[in-house]
Length: 289
Image (cartoon, rainbow, N blue to C red; front, side):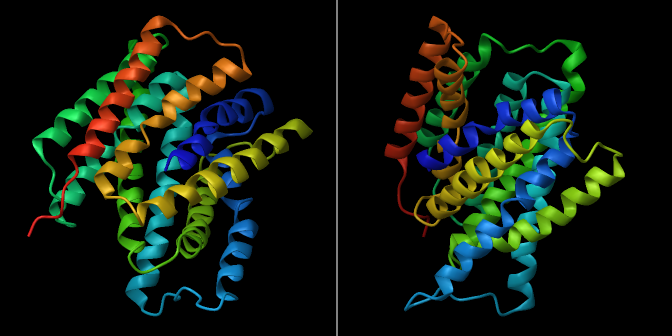
């Protein structure tokens, strides 16, 4: 999950670069992210099937629909999030979209029968407080960002739904199978969204393709692939909460790559968030009878 968080932590700046510097529309950027990942995902899935004990393939209509639903949820998550990045600050979009653990925790309690203790809820609140402190230096809740902030919150609903669906599917299918099927429906959904919005579909410069390929392989194949793998081994509630590491890692990347300084408030916020995540891990217990 930590490796996946590192992969997706590159996404906000890569999306901003593609949209602001290379002329691509937000939904078009999301489409290329998934579409360019498809060949690698297909090769991964094909390699799995050649192993001595290959993972099983979907056989029923219900299983295939659930796999495709994961892709649609991810596509809606990407479309709303990429638009939010365009209409609000990266800090706002990243923080608000990471409210997804609330959705996943409710689903885990109601459907998966995970026992959500008061200690876990408290730890989650501590982690959210740390994330808010981390983003606080560049967080801007000005009225002009209301639409973008609202889209980021809608993103959290769809992203939480995607994570929860992946968790359900991991009891039956491998990460490669889930990612490949989901990428097919996600690509189709995002292409329709980009065409319907009349966005520019091609980057203005050759460097734009580099950003798109990096987005596909670093954030989608590596990042989301590792996250899908981790959901097969972690409780849904804790796994989703662990992805709050993304804004912390993104801030560290910006510090190392772009020489963006970290304020004392951000450093404290990162420490508080890590404390909350560690406490949440320790509070996990067996499922309810």
